[in-house]
Length: 122
Image (cartoon, rainbow, N blue to C red):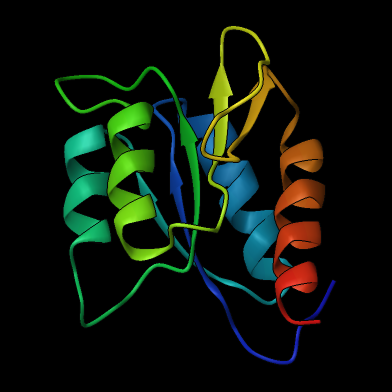
């Protein structure tokens, strides 16, 4: 799962085991990964123009005030045609083209993110 260029991925998840497992697997696949455990941390990361985020994985329900849906909206301000990968209580269609999954494994998220990135480089 190697790509020609290192895409930067934001992994926003309050579950430390899931977040770090996914981040470790993405790094092993050759991607740059930034992690956040709250929506506020993730929001600030998305707004850091010196280190732009190119892909977003987030859990819909994040602690404090900013949730994954707000993060996806912020992400779409920069990438209106690029889907975010969002984990929610149940999978459902998205009008913005986001990929909404119900409780996937880190391996399943890794595969989806990899397919999105590879598809964008074609």
